[in-house]
Amino acid sequence: MGMTVAEKILARASGLGTVKAGEVVEPRVDVAMSHENAALVINQFTEVFEGTGLEVKVWDPSKIVIIFDHRVPAESSKTATNQKKIREFVARQAIPNFHDVRGDEGGICHQILPENGYIRPGYVVVGTDSHTTSHGALGAFSFGIGATEMASVWALGRVLNVEVPGTIKVVVNGDFAPGVGPKDLILHLIGTLTAEGANFKVIEFHGDAIRRMSTSGRLVICNMTVEAGATSGIVPADEETVRYLREEAGVSDPVDLVTPDADAVYDQVIEIDAAALAPQIACPHTVDNVKPVDAVAGTRVNQIVIGSCTNGRLDDLETAAAILKGKKVAAGTRMLVFPATWRIYKRAMKAGVLETLVDAGAVIVNPGCGCCLGVHQGALGDGEVALSTTNRNFKGRMGNPNADVYLCSPAVAAASALTGVISDPRKVV
Amino acid sequence: MAKVVFKIGDDVSTDTIYPGRFMATVLPSETPQYAFADFKEFNAKIRNKELPVGSIIIGGKNFGCGSSREQAASCLATPGLVVVARNFARIFLQNSINVGLKTVICPSIEAEEGDELEITPVEVKNVTKGRSHPVVPLPKARQAIVDAGGLIPYTRKLLVQERSA
Image (cartoon, rainbow over all chains, first blue to last red; front, side):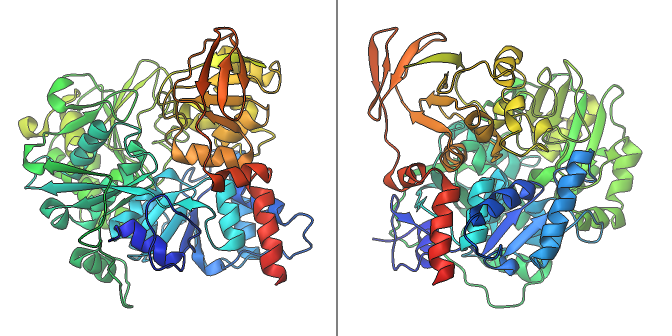
């Protein structure tokens, strides 16, 4: 019986010839990523060693990556102290892969990992962040874990008791209409599956629309698979993956493309016609409350947000700039833009994209997660409405339980910035 | 037997259980003060340590969806609360097992605040309503972590075996 991509990766990482959904395995880990919550991981990791008499040492410093992104620069003395403790730990354990609060190497973890060549097809990647699903965009099996689980990985180098997940195959064919793209696809899929539809499962993407999609777009769809509960999203690696690794990520060593067997067994197959999709909006207060833009067009918006690990890449910023060039953000609406990494920030700066956005009235915020999860910059007032390209709209997500957050693509966000109300980019542009 | 002290619906996210704005607080000894922070009355009961150990929260489906923040599990584990839900989101369930939050998967659970429940390995008896609801047992591999007292002692044992070898 054939294997899915997830089964193949888990079999290899667990030293087994074959595995199938439901089996329990202990895969070795290729990349173990943490951000500021490394403060808690360090606490739990140290506790593992208590009473053992063993030296407190991580299993392999070269496989750990630590990236500051959730609260940068620190918004409080508490965060600053956590970051200080993490820096000291990084130095003590000689962890070479550390991205501090720096313009020359910093940014949001889920963009830092791919663009710096940390991710390869076939890797097992774990991160103390639910959106670690992103890295399946490069053909890895990549999933979010908690801090104590990470402490265990730091100690042992493998994840204990992983049940091999079943896989949902999603086949997307056809061409997106202008103004419609990967974000609309994934919002539509989450609406179809619901918030728990892929719980304990992998979503594996296929079809000609996926094959033609850039790695940037694949990161968008894999990033948000967790909003349907998925353990990991995976796009089987192909020529585009190799191109990205060679041209963007500086990877020169051989790349092993892991593809599913022709007779792999799937729990479910979902087919989507990309050409039939309209721009999609996730309405308050769950990500699976998805409607076509027409259903909520005209809703007054106080704050537009473009950025995050979901939609803060150069193509996202370019899409927004193309819509806003020479025009103005509507009076009474404010617009925040936060590029995913400083590398993207610099490219957007050189290309004049940031200037276009600033001239239109947008405020450029430094790369980071703060605004998306309501911990740092861009909080909403009581009764206010945000329209955001980020990934979650739970009550209180942007720092205020008395506010509404709608989620959308960069094109919808930019078109709506011009009008001050939720708008269909196909009608505005 | 223990009392249901809080009931909440489907798809409760970890942002609801432990809002992002308190995420700089990480230690399990400190997280309970922000548990369900936007539900002032229930939060006050946790904060003031008014709830007996074993007090029960009733959730719907997909309890704990969203962020991987472990604070959402530790803030309920430290005061000794129990969550009975129709099912749980993957990362939250794993975090709960790892940090010792008792979670009970009970797909047909029906209970209201104030009801008295008796939880056994196979069923949840709603004593107040006189009805029983079957429990879905944890997979063996996960039960082993619960039995070890959480993932830290479980990992410690393996670590000692492997690094001493």
